[in-house]
Image (cartoon, rainbow, N blue to C red; front, side, top):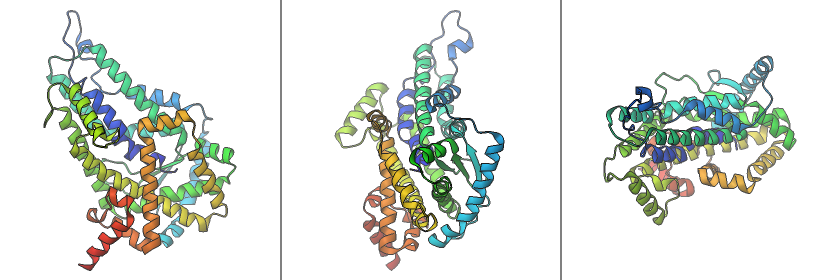
Length: 407
C-alpha cells in the first residue's frame, strides 16, 4: 500500500514507537551513582535516550542490499517524476473539484538508505522534547539505575527503532512528507519515490513501470490537496502531536495517579487496560493519551483513505493497466510469511494498515452515497472530521454532517 511511509511518519511513531519509548524511559530516567574514579562522561553516560547513529546503521542493515543509484540516473528520474506530477495535476483536480498546483512539491528520488535517513531525521525531531526531558532528568537527579542499565536500554530502543524503520524501507514505494512540527512556513511538501522498491515491484509483479509510478504518484500527490489546500489540517496535526508529547512527558514525570514504582504502575495499567478490551499498544496509554491518539488515528485513516480513493478513481481513467496493477500490488501486500505477519502484529503495523483500509472504505462509501464533493466536507474544519467510530460507520458521519447543514 502506498501509505506505508505515512503509516510510519504519522502513525507508528505515536503508536508502538511512543509506547516503547515510554516503557523504557520510565526506568532509565536518572543517572547512576558516581563511583570513585569515574569521570564525568562515564557517570552520566552518553546522556541520550536513543543512539540515532546506531538506529540508522541497524535500519540500513535490516533494509538489505540494493543497487546504488547513479547521480546522473537519479537526476533523470527526478526530472521524469516532476513531469509526471505536472501531468496528473489536472486529472486529480478534475475529480476532486479543487485546483492545486504541484509546482512547490519537491521531488526526491531515494534509495533505501536515503529514505531511512530522511525519516530518522523526522523521527528525531519529533521525539526531541522527550529527549530533552530525559537529559533534563539526568542533570537534576542524583540517583538512578547503573550506567550499564541505561546503555542497555538505549541499545534496545535504538535497535528496535532501527529494525522497524529498516523493515519499512523495504516496503515503502512513495511517501509525502509534510515536515511535521517544523517552525518554518511550509510552501509545499516533499514527495519521495523509493526507486529500488519500485523496480523490485515492477520486476516481481510484471507491471508497466511508467503506469506503476503514476499510480503511486496519484496517491502521494493527493496528500498535497489534503495538507496544502486546507492549511488548518497541518496546524491541527502539529498541535495534536505536541499535546501527545506533553502528555507523554507529564506521564514520565509521575504526575496524576502514578506511584513511585513505575514498573509496577506500567504492568498494572497494561493488565487492567487489556481486561477492558484495549489493544496491546493502547494498553500502555493513559485515558487522555488514548483519546488524543484516537483523534490522530481518525485523521490519518481519513488522509490515507482519501488518497487511496482518489488514486483508484483517477487511476482507472488514466492508466490502461490499472486493474492489473491494483490487483497485483494488493496481492503483494497480503502475501506475507508467518514470521512477517507476526512482526506486523507485534509492532502494531497490522493495526495501522487495517485502520487505513477502514479509511478507504469510509471515503468510498461517502463518495458512492453522496459524491466526492460531500466527502470533501471532511476537510472543512476539525469539527467536521470523522471520529474513529464514524470511520467505521460512514453513514453515521453523513447523518451528523447533514444534520449540521440543516441547522
